[in-house]
Image 1 (cartoon, rainbow, N blue to C red):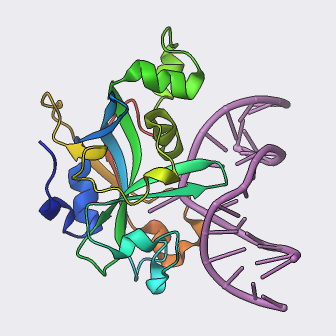
Image 2 (tube, rainbow, N blue to C red):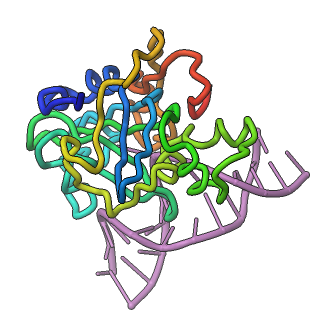
Length: 203
DNA sequence: AGCACGATTGCCT
DNA sequence: GGCAATCGTGCTT
């Protein structure tokens, strides 16, 4: 069951919290790769010094944030990694939720091939490193800037309820990662994690 | 046209 | 723990 448009039509903090435990799917060329979201960050838009859209900054890169909710925002960081966000809130309020880590569930062999060049016989360490970071999960799912602006209610990249009920979990909130430039916003508790999940990007 | 920097990762000590 | 890699992007000139 895909999350509907209204799910995304709320503020980023609310959506970031509620995306925990949901299932991200990338389906391309008949190949399905998916995982459960275990870590997110909220970027609250024009008033959030951590956000790409802070102060109403609008560029070709973040243009999709200014469109309707429920679309992908994929951007390149450090010249080599991609980060996946869901655009949230009504059109014109440029907020987003960064997907920071997944627990892999489907297409693990394909993800392993994409990350490590082998489809099986992963060490426990490799298994954990498959999707425990925003750049890593994009690598595993095969997501690039070419997947920017996709409708998350479409058939290529979408988010659903989990196929089988995910074990009950506690949600933790803490400061976001690597936004040292964000002044007072540095300490806002807008990073959400499933407590003790083995696929978190850090403790 | 040039330049400083980043919502990261992986390798090294 | 530290730090280099690597280049698209945005902003200045």
